[in-house]
Length: 230
Length: 230
Image (spheres, each protein chain N blue to C red):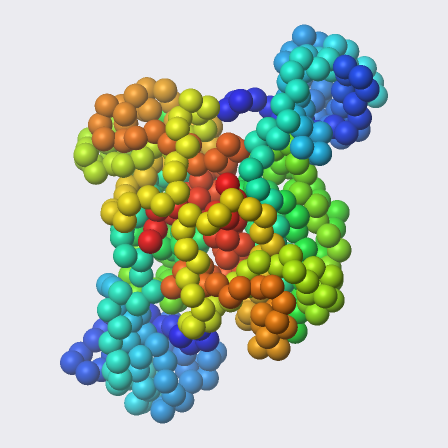
């Protein structure tokens, strides 16, 4: 699959998949694909399909499914991140790289030290979709709505596995972690407020240090994914 | 050290370190540090110092060394990257994150598929220095001059440990790698030319796949560092 081109479509009918709108324009005008060409399509729900183009008309591209590949390009476990919102330039790097590194869900957190309080949702979703196609994944990671820290902890209670913060007294995360699902809290620039850490620890979160260097928020996200995604 | 401010200086005399030029301006004007304040200084050669500011004059800041910390913020092993040159926006993300993740040396490679053939050295070095201070490292990673792929392989011969490429038939890199020094080849966008792969394999390089997803060049750099830096 190394050099295959991935497209995205959630419109599937029996043995055919239809590529529409912007994806269709891109396929037909920019990539200049033709009937008979083989393309890969991700449905964003966990499967990718090897298909043959049957017809390209004004409105859409009709493809015949040749092979279905469940979990194509997907990790074995689910690693989700709950991240203090950071400046758009850093946030966007985080999103792109997190998708490449196999993130499952992303929960933007509003914390005591977050300066940025909102996200450009449309732009963020574009980046996620584009990274999905670039790296050839089958599952489209979900970007949730921003949520205040305390509320998130209450919602997720016992699901939270780690809280990562630049604190000297935290134990360093070990290599070779167990293959299971993880939900990891990562602070914004400036880290978490001590009250937030306390609340997380009162629930299921274990404190961990990712390295003996101070990592920026987006780098911490990538380091955590790299350690936990299998 | 979590909230300490790091400065950079290679001017050390006996028990004192002098902060000069732009670093001095930043310290005195922007950060508004005063005599008596404690600051951390990295010498870029592998040690960091906890110091007390003695004097701030027009030209420089004189600091007294309180504690010397060899290998502060440094990994136990040396992991260096030889990377096909990519577009500046991606290259700069790679540099910043690679420093945070503990890279030792960086060798920019001109390969058959590199489109970009040169680097903005001054800008690249600024990014490396700024990342060093941000993450609190003691060793300033060296950015070497761009070198043609074949020449690099000849120069480094038996030192090259891995070649990472998006090839389906490469074995996946395992977790829990041995703590030793590594020199890893990472292709530019589009990967390595088959002849380049062949040449690398004829020397000491082992082929590895970092994930079952296609990673961008800069993401592959970070994933490799994350697996190998201890």
